[in-house]
Length: 333
Image (cartoon, rainbow, N blue to C red; front, side):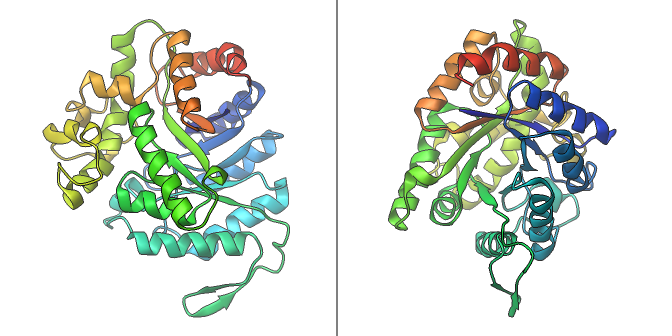
């Protein structure tokens, strides 16, 4: 299993670079950041420094979207970084949540997401492609390679992910939901004539190593609120008893009353009181090292290729150290 770390690009940006560099020395393979340019600093500027400060780490957004940047700009960013640092980028992409809503836009449609993934991947890998009724090509990008992983929760998004993307990002670590979503993605790949085993599966969630479960829950409760934004979209589309959407994913947002993006991804966010302890325990990795290893082995058995830690709590360095010094080696890393 690969391991990644997901960082917010809070100032100072050099702290993000420092954490990425340290994570690589501890055995982490991937360095991700949020991509929400109003709430935090611009990530693509920081990626260049992250790549410069590391030797092997693969870097990219978790996740970007088709709405806040022109797709040709996004593709050029990845292709340029690959040319500079040797194919060490990855593109996580979804319909858009905070980055879009904060500037007054709705998330983009799945049809738009589908088209954007094709354009970005084609251009970033040096192929000619059609964009906005024109033919586009980066003649200098022939050696560039870019995996495009799609974040998804609902049935239609999971189907698109399996049919067209290079892999799947699930932003929660509940084994039951992981099993359902991974199965749906692989089935879609098979129906599309693709090899289901070729998809790269990444699960991302907060991880906090320690003994004070109550404190860990309060530090990670924000994550249930973040996931709740996507679940609310599913309920609006399918209903809370929607076909193909497990109640394990939808029941907990019954008490949700709006959301304040100024606290997005932050411990102590006051708009996450509706998230019950049970959801935090299921969606996140909490407890001592044995508890983390047990959950990681469950996820690995389901076919998860990477676990990425959302490192947004008050024990960043301690959690990185616990993973790097004991948990990753115990998982064979």
